[in-house]
Picture (cartoon, rainbow, N blue to C red):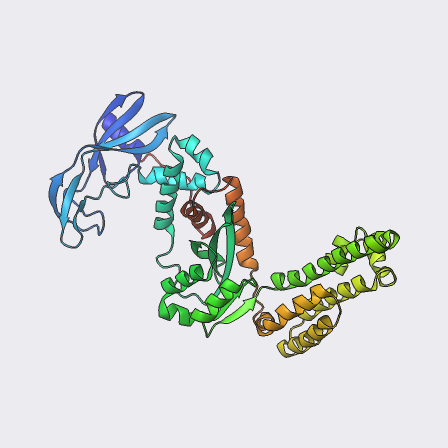
Length: 412
């Protein structure tokens, strides 16, 4: 078997011919060319006539046993009737303008899904920014043609990718459980950019939008999706009430320490028992809460308000829930607990959007779960220097792209 034939089989690339090889500085340089005789456009893949010849170029391929492999070829430019003068298509790379083969980029993408970019940089011997560029090309090749097509129910949330209030807005499709869009920022204008990309038809198809209680997102949805139903995430709604309980506890602690320190010790250590669900309480915690009515009536009232609110949201009838929430808001407003009076004012303003959770049973749980995965990516990378780098990694790992390690079979 000739050496060039062996090299071709080891490369395992279709439509490729090996002409010669050379060794330079410990690296193996293989001279290759496309098998097809007619030149092809790298944009539309149509056959076309040649235009001129460029200088010799090298493409980095996967290493063989620690030996660096380069593919060398003298590319040409073609005159395409549709695309104009462009570089020809080559079978071993996305285009003649890149410096890496298909297999190399796919392998980098596979490891980038599982390792931080610094580890990928060290393993493949490429620059940190080059890893990000390769990730962007891999995502572009493997993502669906139009991820914004046929969206019906979406979730919107933000993610901090770097210290200093650096955020990206993420849009999730509830039907697929995948992130479909991301952009730097968390303002109303950021979300409006998504609606612009969605188009008029796409906006009319949106039925529900699950969000937290961010005023910026609320205003953007109401302005661009007037027919869509906003659903406030149950977790964020209940957290508003839980925060009121915790604030009331702190106020009582400060008041009692100034009046009677002995009475203050009776509510010491009640932070987590007050916030827990009743079925998650330990026997000791349950006993302490049972005596809270005699120890501190104001704090016991706050605990009852929180427990009743959670019980209302567990119900299934929207009309019943709305009526009981109105009763709860009246109770909270006259509770003489400032934290609950303020929370009731906020909840009353968005009552219909809270009740819509009962009707549709949608939450931001899917979006929050994907955000936790994206947040893990930022921690694994110790933060990202730019939003595009963070978004590229999020799209690689949170949009359903499944990459496999490159494996070749030597055919007989």
